[in-house]
Image 1 (cartoon, rainbow, N blue to C red):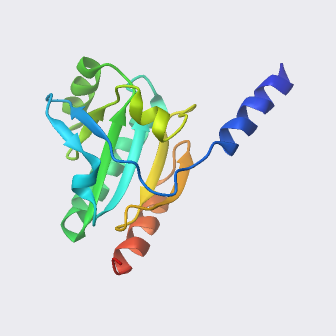
Image 2: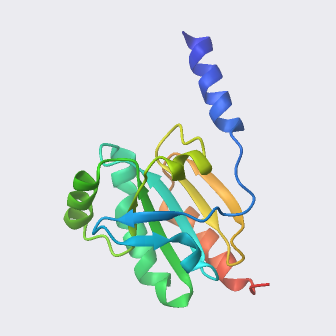
Length: 156
């Protein structure tokens, strides 16, 4: 049993991270189509989460705060829910989420994954390059350091 669990962790750690951010065309919690490429030129944190996931919900207040702090400087937070639209919208309203929350149709998790654990978070620079991938929850300071470093870089 331990060997099976260890193998699963190792395979998850070895999953490929795309070098260039794949464009996503997903519906948001209100049913509107959103294209990830519309945010090209911004620093993006793309967070795959689920409504039933306690660590995912724990990160949301930090993401809200980061969006408030850096949204007017060329940053955007984007959540991609692996849960049902109804549950996701209720969570977004309950938390007062101030950033786009998209509903995965199965495509996003396949292109950026496979996503084997939530939260899984990608940091994308202004040139639409994936520069980091985090599996599991992280403190606000980790994301803030990434955002600051990338906002200070000039787009190419």
